[in-house]
Image 1: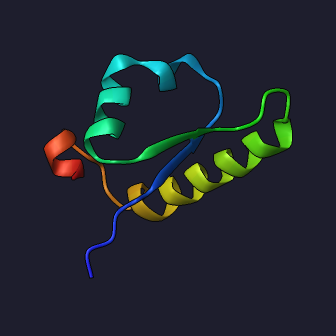
Image 2: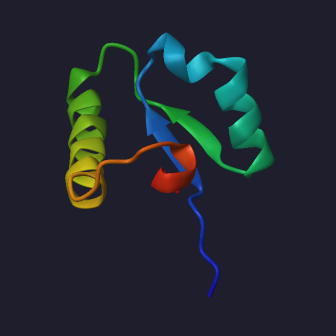
Image 3: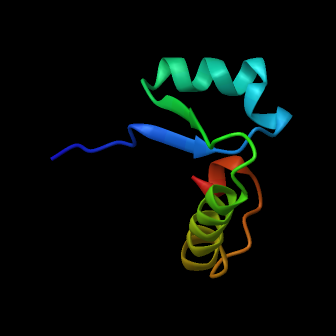
Length: 70
């Protein structure tokens, strides 16, 4: 079964409004979901998820470049 992510949940940081990221999301059919404005409890949920992914996936290797990371 081929599964891919359907949503990217993120806060309102300007990095998520970059044209490059928006093009990537459009090309991969991933919908962008912003956390609520002035809802800091939602940001913690996103940060924890990112932290877990980083810890489980990236702390075991030292990526040399993007190709190596993929």
